[in-house]
Image (cartoon, helix red, strand yellow):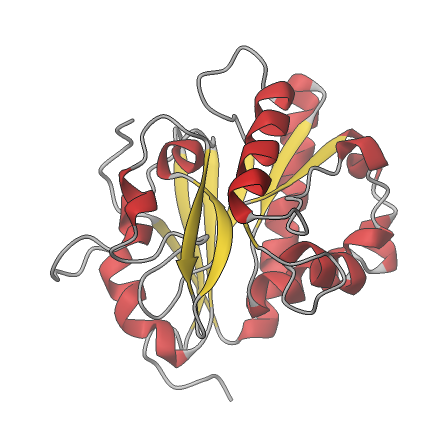
Amino acid sequence: MKGPTTAPRLRVFPDARTLVRAAAGEVLRRGRHAVRERGIFNLALAGGNTPMALYQTLGTARSARCDLWHRTHLFWGDERAVPPEDPASNYGVGWKLGLQRLAVPAENVHRVQGESEDARRAAILYETELRSSFSGEAWPRFDLALLGLGADGHTASLFPGSDALAERERWTEVAEGGDPPSPRVTLTLPALNGAEVVLFLVSGRSKAEALGRLLGLPGGELLPAQRVHPRGERLVFADRSAMGESPAG
């Protein structure tokens, strides 16, 4: 699937806290629009420190009381092959930090079963659930997919050089990466590219080089994050340090 070739739309914030507040507003705005248009909001979540801070913000009293959540379906872009109570679990940590306070019906929470006996089985189970949720679609139609950006240019669990980058038929794949490397389940590039909108959340000076490449600066081989081209918009929310600038204040 080929997406738009234009550069992502960038917003820069003075610090991570301001970025997170703006991202929370963007999630609520996109969600309300989706519910007005179709009666449902399909949201794909990311792991990482900045997204976790976002979930904590969304779980505050004012956001958690929003009627939007009754019509929301939650999905995950990737997950480690660990049970939900493991501190490495994207679902488990995000749930404890704030997602559990949202009024999302239990049947609308579609997590990766990282506790399965092997990552391949977890990937198959997750793809089966995704295909059931998006029945009749060629690829999952997330209204909004949140993504992080690694210093090496990875996003979700699509790492540079991974065989998962070449997958063109499956919605999910098994990949290995991180420090230390560990098996993970990830959405594939075509599955991410089926989203209406993707929003990269990027904070920290270590991300500056990868962010520059994502925004169109020349470099070598395409980074995984550069290969994400959704149906509609690519948005990047970055703080000043991720832009290589001195933090505000």
